[in-house]
Image (cartoon, rainbow, N blue to C red; front, top):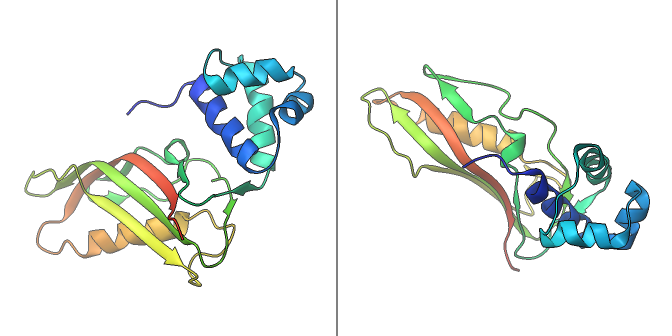
Length: 182
């Protein structure tokens, strides 16, 4: 899966800001554009230029985001593509600070990593490997947590569990933060 384009990134960020209670008009006012331009970005008709996209990104990073019921957020662009090389995990897994989301304390939230490659020492590849951590009112993932420590723990546990066929190489397809319906 390729990195998301500027237009796709703008759509995702505007949707997150809208869910957090910021209207398109407010977004436009803050970044210095008009409301219809922000609407076109949201619909995918146009995409922002680099400078304007940067202002939108900075606004998005400063804003507290809410993970709604049934919501799914792709965190793939925040993580490195290769997690294990030559049998050694490449830590930290993230390449830039993850955004912080909030949700009610009793909400079922999980962070899931879908692997593109999961190659063991015998040369076998298990491309559909899934690593996940699920939390529901637990102490291990607090409100506002990014989930990075949890997915790192899941990776290290998966590596430790592979006693007879050590993991040689692992790369990701997607990393998602999901909130189930209550």
